[in-house]
Every structure is written in structure tokens, then in C-alpha cells.
Length: 98
Image (cartoon, rainbow, N blue to C red):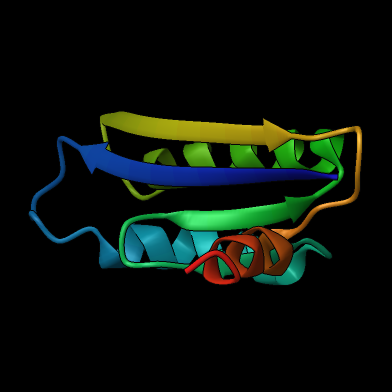
């Protein structure tokens, strides 16, 4: 099970607002079977690494479809194979230590 975080920033658009671009990318996730959590600074996705990589590519492409001439995307991946993990488990692990 892998967890990834993606942050997509379209550049070269007519506005400084990016929420409509983000919404288009999140729609792809809603149509997928991947578990995800939208945050103020990015989107966290949980699932099989191959499935995640496939959707990350599609998400990165969405601003171009709306006219962006450049897209800056930051992706972080945590691929742990020695034990099952997930978004909630990672958060609870830290909360239990507080």
C-alpha cells in the first residue's frame, strides 16, 4: 500500500486562482476507486502504487486541458512494504505519541 501527496500549480493562466484547476483534478479521483483526502495544500491518495501513478499523471494533465501553458506539480510518495499502512494509521500513530 502506498500513500502519495500531490500538489498541482497551473502557471500561465489568466487568473491567480487555482481552485477550478484543482477541482478538475479532484474529479478524476472521485471517479477512481482510490481513497483520498483533500487538504488546503495538496491531496493525499492511498492505494496500489501503479494505480496511484496512473491517476497522478492524469491529474497533472488536467490544467493543460483548461488552457494552462505550464504546470508545476509536486509529488511525494511513501511506499511501505513491510507492514500495512494508510492515511488514518499514519495520523493515529503520531496522535498516540502526543
